[in-house]
Length: 379
Image (cartoon, rainbow, N blue to C red; front, side, top):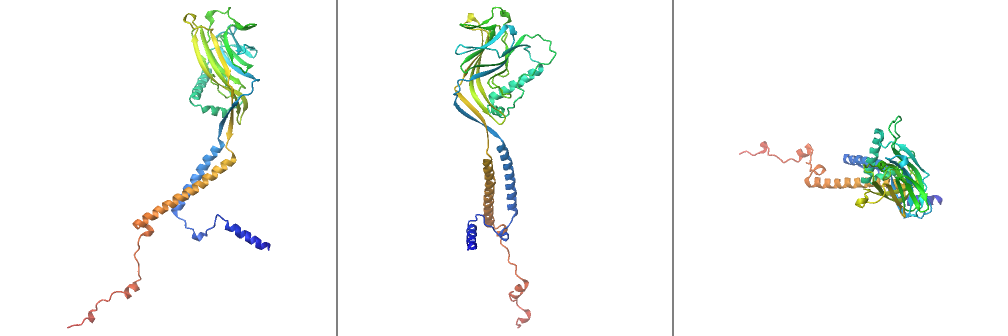
């Protein structure tokens, strides 16, 4: 009884076979079919090879949401060189709430403003990358995907044995500020605190020593990620006027970065530049110096690196193989059909009429009787 059920089950399964087997004696191979098969297999191999590289590649996904974190501090990373001596300049931050942020994390280092040939080459390369980033925005995704902790993004150190005068001041370090609009500025004199605000002691600095030519080697917000190039990195401004004001208006966007190499909470920013000469007689009022006014955005951007799932890769691979098989089969059948029509119309190939070849004995036996000379009656 069980064997009977098994036989019925097997016969039912055989009836559901979608791939019936054809005896080899009924299969005919041709040179045209072999050529199409070679082309099909070659196309499959090439497309599968390129599809593998697509599977290995990644892309960046951007998501936007409201920034609900208003209690944390915002970190500002600074590395600016000013063409004035350190005892003549001071840097501090004043936010929108009239709160003066202490600058304990900022250091003043006497340096030479002019760059060495090696440093100038690095600076030109950085400016070239900045220009390409402004033209090709997709390059920023390449930087996101290739960030490496410890990658050299700072200005190379100056060679040992320098004898030039240290007439410039490198202001570098980091400070933590409230997440409100603020103003980071570098101007003449050291900052001091007093109940009504803050001031800079500039009375003892000669006006002839004013020179706010500067170079921004690095300026970023949030966690510092080596390998990321920010909009103001490499900016250099040179002036010959003692009364010059440089202004940078910055909009900071909180950003969470998640890639295969790094995961960090950082900030992107956009900037607008403006500069003018202070001339009170002409109505251009203000204070000489470098002013960076920043404000934070209410939106937060989450940038995450996405990868194609393995199951999707298999589905695409099966689609490639099956699609090529079906397409080449239809093309081969259509070409063969057209070829048969043309050959039948013009009597070519297998459709060419053949002459019937009869045996000699058959021809001799059925030949027309000829008149025999001997049988002709004579008069």
